[in-house]
Image (cartoon, rainbow, N blue to C red; front, side):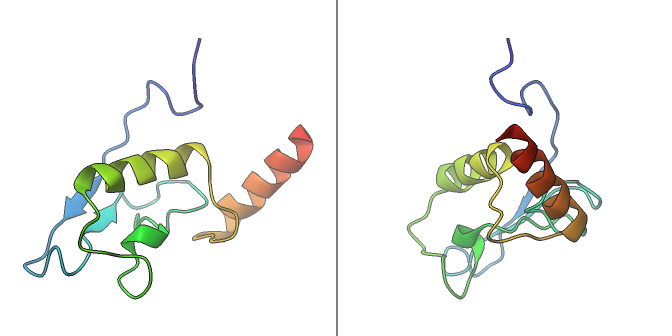
Length: 98
């Protein structure tokens, strides 16, 4: 029995750490075209803890980043959509489940 819709899938994620890490967050990207409400069409992950201006803290660990992305895949954040089509489909799907 599957625990999530994503279980068993292969989701290549690239984390790029600049020379300014940990002062600045890593860039986290899926391949372009990855379809998820909180992933931009470019593949960039839209997650508050990766936002250099508001959510990032140097104490955030790589494990916390990966768990945050894993949680985001399983439970999209409709308050912070990164792509229109993914957002609308997510809203349509969740309203049908009610």
